[in-house]
Image (cartoon, rainbow, N blue to C red; front, side, top):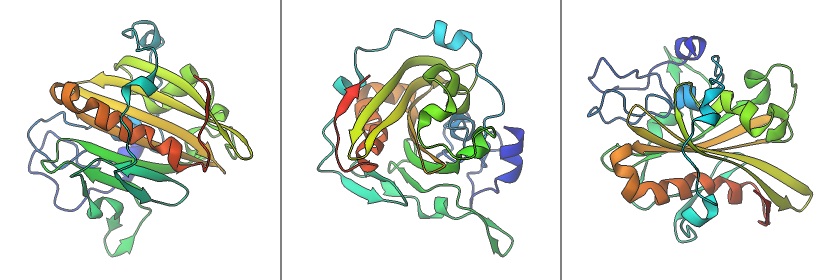
Length: 246
């Protein structure tokens, strides 16, 4: 994680709060909570979670719901953002954070921090997509064709869930596509009064990570909306959706 934070330049005009780390990719610009969404860089491993998740994380997790699909909304009426190799549905009223896609150091443009980033009007809720080469996450694989190349659901958690988190749900979802099946890993967890929902998939040597985050106290009202936005990545990477296993 230290490597990631040292290589990621700060976004323009960070909030005037010295406790919040402005280098974290999925952190919104709201300064009201010093711990607010300061996890998505490590959360998504966004290029490289360097610390493994404690083995106890899966064993101490709260019992998950029967199916994440029973806890998502119909997003067909939402705006659909098309990125490179993916598409995602954006919750109503969320604003495109244009500056998040720019990563500048001096006068030279660097690799984009986000493939997409949207936030609620008050900045307290964030939806982001990050794309990273799979060999940055797991160097033993030259090219991941499916997220299972990163390991099992439990093994891959170290790339996406920060140590010390409370894991509420973890699911493997297989979707039938025209050329076979694609596997998605879904994780929902909490840490430092924040609640996260994350979906990860792999294709052609790249790992796609869609995540949504909000303060825990807002999750009861907005959790379905945010979870649905993250899960919409699954429809955005295929032309035919048929869930065959969870």
